[in-house]
Image (cartoon, rainbow, N blue to C red; front, side):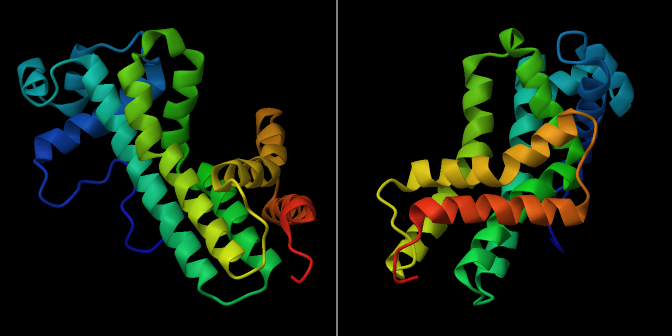
Length: 216
């Protein structure tokens, strides 16, 4: 992930005050939750006036949407980069699919602030407009899913997989390689790196049981 922006890092060419506001928003939203957060609190955290905040973001909803969408873009960029480098390695089919699974699981540990915001949407869903969910999903989840579907289509073109519905196949691979580690994390027992490797490998093998071609 070398050279990849982390959520919250200043981006080249963006005003410093805007970056200060988005960093502060990420902190305050994460600490207080969406419903309890005020633009006054974000402005104080950023060291700017409320008036300055509103020059950049017309509402709390717009600010949260921007923070989440920009964060989702960074996470998706990192995922695509990691998968691209891993898939180029010319390894076997199982190993190539495991690259995708490991990248999916690893990002939850590498980008904790982003996934804290995602959990906030799940908990405080009624507070968020449909526009927010659409922008976030398009920047993050759907882009990642499209990338996986594209990679599976490439493997199918090589004669290694039977894929009639790439989007559905992508969802199957995501579920099989990430669900076990997510359950462990939610139960307060996050898996070790070695256990993650075992979980991803097991998920990939189940996936291949349904999608591998006889000749592969």
